[in-house]
Image (cartoon, rainbow, N blue to C red; front, side):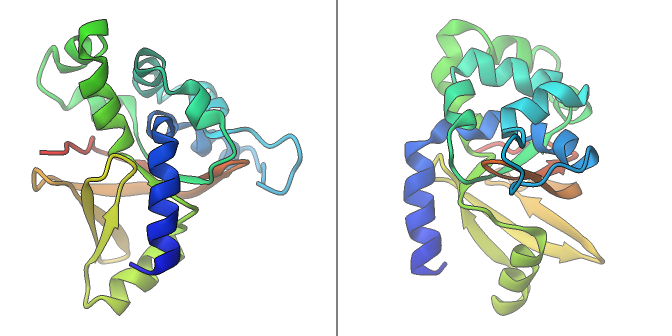
Length: 187
């Protein structure tokens, strides 16, 4: 990690809320919005509008991260779809969104966010320059491993679960979103 990446990680830690809204950028990308457009949607705006990130949006709201993920950032959010959340054991999401589990939920959501804007080409360069695997530090302080599998970027979480990026580089006014087919777990 470069000093710039480390500083970005520190900044992201201050804005831990961004993780929950990773799914929103997908919509912005699909509608042709660009970060340079003054009225470009935030990560949260995009997530709310996609129709496939309802679980993520509910989790972001339950964790109180809407304001953080709407802040200037920038953030890189790995946004699991509703289908990705549905792969978790039955009852997991319902338990996590309960008020008494806000801390755990916040930790999981911020484990999906990295400080700064990291595009897929940035990730590929990091992977190649680090011998085929790059380590990313999340806003939550955890580690994610990124590698290539063919032409897909695959992220492995602390639990050893591999998740593919299914849509990369959804640009928002406050960062970039990479849609994933799985949920990252810190352990």
